[in-house]
Image (cartoon, rainbow, N blue to C red):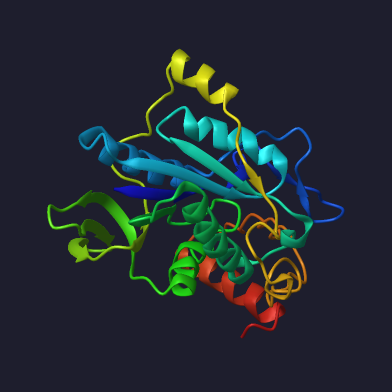
Length: 268
């Protein structure tokens, strides 16, 4: 089985802060990590490979060249090959444009590797945008079936994929034909750690960087030009003020006090 795992490098949201003056993310000094749900998707693919050594895992990301570090991390924990799409024409892409770019990059990687991907895997959402739209958008662009919120994924003997899908009230088992797209949620296990040997090999790996021309991108559908979503304002919610505790001598006096306060504020 050939699997393409799409990952995103994101700022560590446990550390990131908002600039109170500009209401924008303060990224300086904040470490970048592989989005956690994407790490679960890679681990799910690696577990398939553990059982079938013929499985090939290719990891794909879009972003600035600093994302190469995230891709090398992925190579150290199960990825066989990695590609980065990096081009100014892709900057500022919303989920619609990102889905288009990744779908085109997938086609180019198949051409370069001489393979066809049976399954595309994504984290259910990135922790910086939390839209949960990119995986489904890629599936839509490619015209392939999709299953979201996968808890567990395994191939069947007849060349299909079986998915244990997480629901609010439990789980659902679905079977889907290939090629397909699967987005992965948090399972009951954690991603594996790299070994010293795998980490050293990953650090030495040469990761191809594809630009817009390589992928045959229509620049009108990429970056800001291809992004109908516009962010008008970013802000932190106002801090809630503490409540007022009313505690008079008797319940009747407390009720009267509450009534007087509400009346003064014009509530009643």
